Length: 156
Image 1 (cartoon, rainbow, N blue to C red):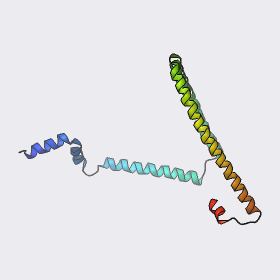
Image 2: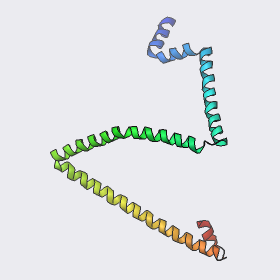
Image 3: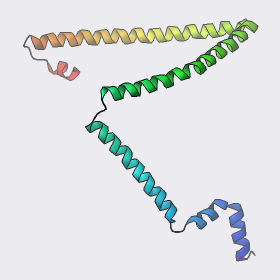
Image 4: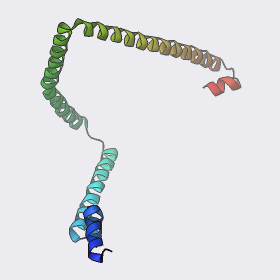
């Protein structure tokens, strides 16, 4: 039969997280309270900044400055993105040259996906055209002074 010390040793070695929880289950220290206080202050300051922006929106020159900095940061990312694209193209061009069967297979998949997407867009365009046609008909009916039927009102 195990003694109390053996059981606690077994428990702490098998379940070390339980031991840590038991040790950490003390009253919060002043440092954690300060951290929590800082987090709430940061949250409040972000909210107040949002409220200030809603009440006093930034001027056009401030927005232009912001857009300029964002544009510059995007321009700085172009060379690395271009390098990645060129590296990708070079890698797959080499693979396609070495094994043309892969290129044929890729081309067949790309062709099928393109056909599928074009069919999807064509169906969506036809549905959109039908909706515009129906909306125009109902708008004309309302402008002429007629009332819409129950079905037309539900459709709107």
